[in-house]
Length: 586
Image 1: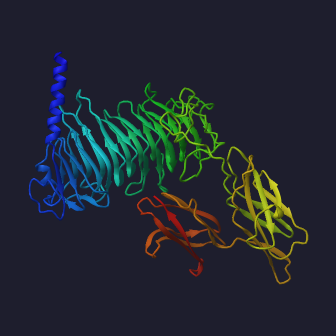
Image 2: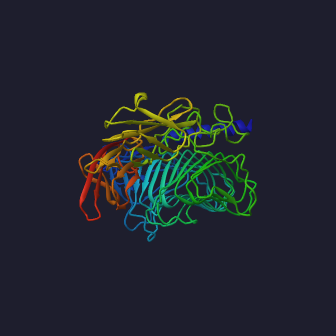
Image 3: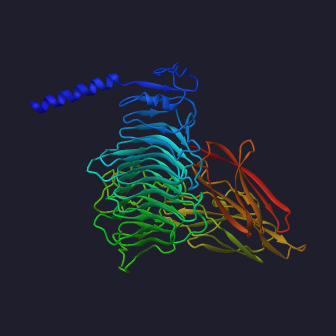
């Protein structure tokens, strides 16, 4: 009976408390009349409204840039009108943009810093738990840009249980993305871009990290660890995309993940690393690394201590090695081309991917079947239909002609259901590559064809085919023309060409391919649809042949963009220019 009375009293107190909660407004156009409870009387600064607010109150911030340091009172909720509408800009002399206390929520606005320089070291959103305090904060739908550290949740050891959340937010252009120690934090559905650590789990942290994109970008550093843990409690890291877009100065200190006692599953590691996943501190009863796609390690995909099981490795200098030389399980850990729907954008698995049902035998997917390796596998992944798609078209084609003999070579496809290649030819450019112009088939990556009485120009394209009969789009067209006045021979003319980007539309990454007839200086530039320059992607000497450049539009708005190539001869003479359109959809 006594317990029931206490519960009743608590419910009554909560009801009274909610009735007394206030909404206060902040606007550039209000009269700034206390207590700021309407848009008409809205405060002209956030801290004016905060100074009158307490537990349960909500502050709604209108459109504008508010240059001030925001220090919350406990229990207050602050929300804006959107990233582009409501902006809190750090004061030049301040180290912190926003300081949170217990039971605070901040949402739907942007916090803008002054830069990434380590002096002074600045924080976008900062919270610190005292020795005898709880810290329960919620950061949701916030964009944090241009700080030394985007979000930091720190604290002292104590026996209190806390729980914070960082959700649906963007942290970009920071030296360090998210830093957590001595806190229990869920980090879900964020995009974090930083140059040192996108995610740092410090002493005593216990994190649940899932459905995020973590990107290491070369803003100011030459070495990095995308995700790092140090003396934390066991955390769970699952179903994340973890990417490095560094291209130069890649050493074995550049890592995708330095692992403590974490459970790491169904993550996608891509890009350029020295070592993609590194474990330290010997074997751990808490560590478990399984169901991940691990790629991009220049030296190793994985290096360290066990366990390691049911992972797929691809495109690493060396795929894996235990530090003590213990043999690695090569039955559950596999090496296969993954067969994603799209290599740069859509990481769902195709119908015949070798990663399907190749994960941990004791873990099921959402649909109840054995777990898949990769981003959408495991109990927290997604159930979807596996599409039976055509293979990737042949790429990197080279051609040699001697008298009436044509020799072709190209890069190999790696799809698990791949069957072979179809070679087509005609005397007319732009011909339709169908069965009436089929020269031959091969399962290899080279093809030789003798064409008796071969004279005049000739054109060739290739297509890929899989075991189900799905045929790819045609390759680029190869042109062979006669040489000499008497047409005593032929030569391959690999004309200058700027290809359509793929994928298109894209978000946020696409690949731009181009071919050079001769060596020269290549200037590849992206423009807005009105011709304003966005970024120079290439400005360097390149040899003749086929080349690709990756373009990322993370910071750009959706829309149509132009990409233009200018090629100059070694003497500096313009020899080729071309422009194409691409569509960024977010």
